[in-house]
Length: 277
Length: 277
Image (cartoon, rainbow over all chains, first blue to last red; front, side):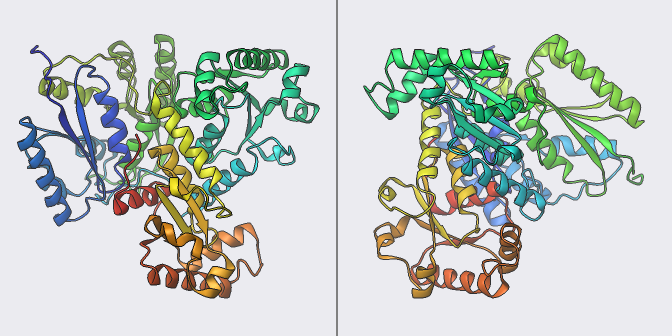
């Protein structure tokens, strides 16, 4: 194989909707090429001929200025628009058309070729479910009241900055799951056990832990040179929290390396909680 | 073409990571087949031979019980694991291997074939950026203080339940954008203009509006048979809010039909706000 190109390659994510799916799959593919440099451009809402022509102009301009043809990852559904984009000076990789043919044959149906809906739509019960889940996460983010824990699908417990809040919000937005959030208090850590108020919900608990070094880094960003972000303090808190989870049989995962998406999906997978859409 | 099959088809999303990308593209493709009935199963974290064999067993069991072969949408990266999944009794559609070959040729490199990273990873600055953006959205969700508006990338304004909060959170989680949220108050609506405190940030404002009928439905779900969810009240509020946006030259979009993903992406697209990762 020839040696990797040094010159950054422009990569276009072209979509008739948000481009989120094209970005996710395209980035996953690009992450396989460690030495390569990419400049990423998302072109969302390419939904008519003028916009498709504009997109081609941008792709061709990049081809000319880079001196190397761009990569185009496309989820365009409409045949006419796809035909226009396809004629640009680029390596055109089609995340839609590549699969629609085999699916038509297998299902024995013609596809509708209407612009795709990759995401939960607003015009059905899923929207209200999603909003309710977000509101639940916001209303149960601080551990102040356990009043609504009976409605929770899961209650994430952990020390401050272990990833509870973003994970709860992601569970709500992506899966419609009702996730509450219990920050272990100084008192809990000192006593070395879960508070009485949590015991009725013990089976809904899921613990988040984190490497002390990483926690220190995150807390330092928030409150530099405080006791809160001191090495001794984070080490103490993490150790006590893990002891509490172990003693109470609370399943637990380390959030140091995984992304929020991975943490949320792991929780669903390990607990067997049903997503609500 | 033969007539559509009535029998529900089992669809598997198979991934070595979260399955989120396989689901998004798979669902977009499935949404093209209106008459077809699907039963969806996600098999995430298929990252070793045992798990791959378990996945094959589940796929084959579905084939036997459905009497028709399942669809398998896969983003598996590892060649050995992919080889195992591929031998199941299913229509196997590969979102990874299909494109990696053409990319290797074009880039003149071998790919690393390490399990993909479709999502912002935890081990870099993007994680802290993301958390900061979520915290910003949470701290600026109620319009009580405009103190931090100078730090906002965008300030979403609108009546209660027009979609501000979930959109702000999505902008934070997906794009690391600092989005504040200003709920138009009864006072604002009565006076028919933006409050003085918002004027310095006028160029950061983006209005959300919504069809009164839809708003009534959402509010009714929250507080049935209240003035808050009455037809007259929602109509009044929506009309006044739109007047305010128009008078102040605030760009505005209707959130009735689009998904949260689409609302968030449209805002980025129309305002030109740069995502932070």
